[in-house]
Image (cartoon, rainbow, N blue to C red):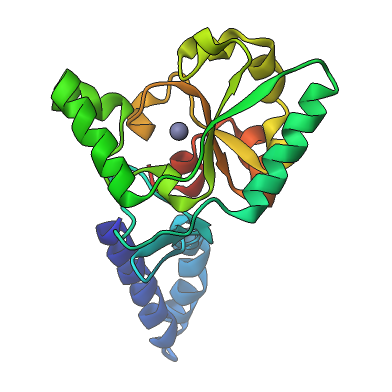
Length: 228
Ligand SMILES: [Zn+2]
């Protein structure tokens, strides 16, 4: 990412210098006029494609969206609790689902750094580190620490935190409705290499208004933001 950024800046600087270096020579002036036409669209495209990344107090925002994944952590002291906008959003979704005869259950919401550390260490002790890394986040890398992620289930508890949840009527409605409440299905099937996680139909991430565009794109958050 940083290398890409520097490359983009170098191309941009070279273009600027070319632009400033116009001379009175007619042939060179003609060259100066055609140069941006030939090369600048690609260069500007490269620059536009670079995501806007901000790190504020150790929290990473890409295009204004807080991002946590296997590479991007949260600080240990980031401890916001479950955000009110998320409570409002899932409450509306669950109520609308109930109106359709669906029975949603909130399985998990905010998890602190220290709580995640305990979970992760237990999984490593039980399954080994390699296996644990497929389904559990290291402390500081759980999206649940953002206060913007929830795990949902149905009244059929046999499907709780299982890919079988993907076959429930709750999921079948939710997968095409969650974005209307500001949620995305964060760990999609077939995208394991990008997200670093196995398919988790139950894990929702609140992103607000951007959810619709992400849903329509069919992309993971990483792909959508250009940080995969
Ligand atoms: Zn989760």
